[in-house]
Amino acid sequence: MADKIWVASITHSYGTDLYAARTKKGLLRQIHAYVEEWWEDEGLGTEMPHDTEEAISEYFERVEDEQCDYEEVEMEE
Image (cartoon, rainbow, N blue to C red):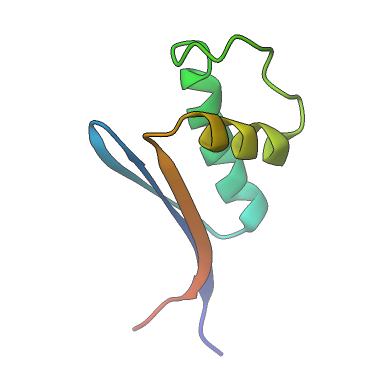
């Protein structure tokens, strides 16, 4: 059985950031850290939701020039 990992890409005006983790929870923590870092700088004007997935979803819905995609993939040898 092949090992699987979770991978994410965040595309923004400066390029693309890539993330990887063994679990979805670990990956979402990394994406959430990005959202937390940029929430205020993007001038969203509201308090960031406490729920990790809700904060991520709201951030990328409201910041139109950024996109986040993630999925579970099999590692190849």
